[in-house]
Amino acid sequence: MTTIRAESEFVGIDVGKDWLDIALSGSQAVWRESNNEAGIAAILTCVKALQPQLIVVEASGGYEQRLVQTLLLNNLAVAVVNPTRVRALAKATGKLAKTDAIDARLIAEYAAKVQPEALTPKDACEIRLKALITRREQLVEMRTAEQNRLGTVDASMHADVREHIEWLSRRIKEMDAAIQELIHTLPEWEEQVKILESMKGVGFMTAVTLLAEMPEIGRLPRQKIAALAGLVPFNRDSGKKRGKRRIFGGRKGIRRVLYMACLSAVKHNPVIRSLYLRLLSKGKAFKVAITACMRKMLVILNAMVRDRTYWRPPLVAEHGFAS
Image (cartoon, rainbow, N blue to C red; front, side, top):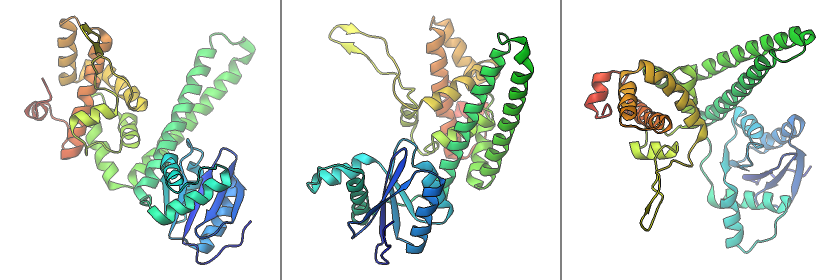
């Protein structure tokens, strides 16, 4: 481990699956720690002694999350940056070689020169919320797999599978409680969850997933929020050929929860049901109709959060969303 210099105001950390490479601004020294609890604890001890102005961590497909959460929980200023931005600095300064140590120095240099905005306490909560939701989804998938397995597994294994299902159900309830507790830490989230849940078809998990996966909700115009979710159909025309309009891109997690919400909404929500039946009466396929309903639902929810307004069909009609 390198000796910490008191004048190092910026720290750069290159993240890999197994290793973390750490560099200090104004120094060529780089040291490496394992990307596990012990390694992160060692880094924490060093940076807490240093108290840098900013720690910049390169995004690495989620391998950085445990480190970032630990630093944030210890009230350290942390920014997570896209690797392409760091490489742009490298190209601009003619530093084309690439190793983990070089990358760590570049990140520290980027931190000192650019000084990207540090994550806020709300950002830290968003990271935590995403992690809880992801884990809950994994547990639900495992429980579903075990429930399906009951029909084919040997009779001698039934008790074992049932025991596992019961354990998974308990863990899911614990995740639900943790998500509830986290939502209660931010009054803004509490209000937004209540607003979102006021629409028929939107349950608690749909609401919190929207907040976690789409923090922009309530802050973007209707076309942009729909595009962000990948719910804006695009033309596929060439010359005289007119192709079918298709959706693509966007955030799959948002589309998944909106799809499930719409399956309920087309039965119980008068605005969404009206749109759904009208499209079916025009000969539209189920997939086309349900996608349009998902887009409509998201646009309405976006407006509700923006205006801090609870669900009321007459009000929705006044805003022009019911047609």
